[in-house]
Image 1 (tube, rainbow, N blue to C red):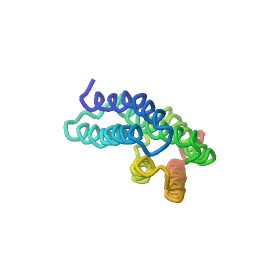
Image 2 (cartoon, rainbow, N blue to C red):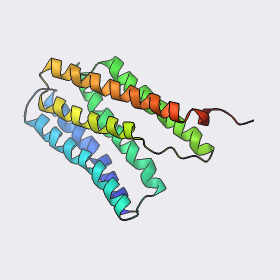
Image 3 (cartoon, helix red, strand yellow):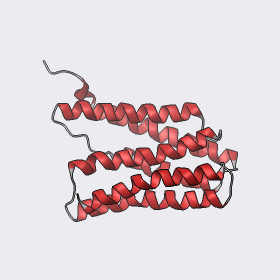
Image 4 (cartoon, helix red, strand yellow):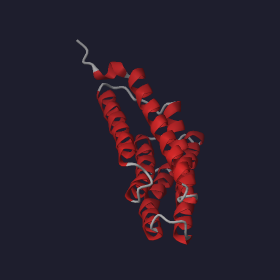
Length: 178
């Protein structure tokens, strides 16, 4: 297993710890929320670090290509679910995010079955980064409703845009060749 993949696994291992401190915070601005925020920031930074190491030291692997986006999705969705539980992230918005993630994952699976690998696009990377930053802001200022609404809106817009882009660019993968 590569160093990059080990770092990705650390991100996955942080998720239950993050959720524990989020749960203890009760969604209120308190010490537990700050601990959860610290864990989330560290876990989010591992996304940049593992990618940098993988490219710099030629550690790109099929396992890493599978695990890295999965770790990102698990981390961000864990935060969204916690905020949804407290009424700070609307369920319809979470459903849009989940639908996009399942749809793009399905598209990638179909493409792989046809011998094509769909790499992460710039809009997908921007979506992940803006989502992670937005969720950090929500943790830092959980009581500001209008800020939460703006962040949820940005997350939904970047999610929809990147999902549509993946399908437009890879539409041909969905059709059987005859």
